[in-house]
Length: 171
Image (cartoon, rainbow, N blue to C red; front, top):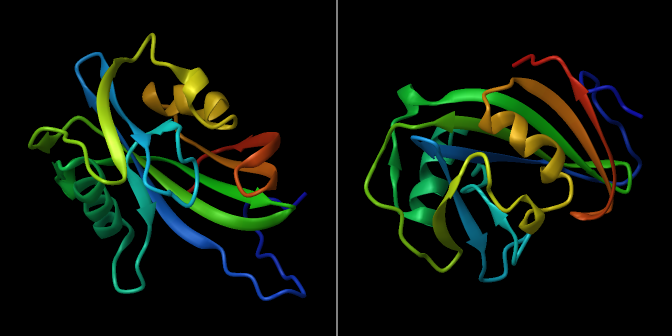
C-alpha cells in the first residue's frame, strides 16, 4: 500500500495521467452520461463528464474543455468546488489521478456527443449499478458534497476492483 501523500518509484517507466470529472447538478438531479465511442475507461457505463488533462492546460481548463466536448455545456470555473482527488491504481501502479469537481452553475443544454449520451437522474435514485464498480463506493459521497481523497485499486485498468481507501481531503 502506498499512502496518498507519497511519490511512487518503479522500475518501469510509468506516467500517471491527470484527469478531471464533473459532477453537474440541477435541483435534485445529477447529469450522467453513457460513455460510448471507445472511451479509454468505462465504455458502456455511466459517469459524469471529464477526461485527461492536456500538457498546456490547467486542471480547471481541462474540466471545462472536457465538459463542453462530452456533453455540450459550458461551466464557469469560478463556480465549481473541488470535492475529491482519487488515485486509481492498476496492478498496484498509480494509473490515473482524477480531480472531482461539483457545480450547479452551467450554461447550455446537455446534448449527445460521440463520447457521451447525457441524461438527468434523480440524486436519490440514480442507476449506480450502471457505473464502474469502484464508483459505487465514492460517487454517492461527492453527489452529497463530501470531501475526501481516495486510493482505488484494480487488478488492471478499471477491471477487477480490489478495494478503496479513503483519506481526509487535502488539495
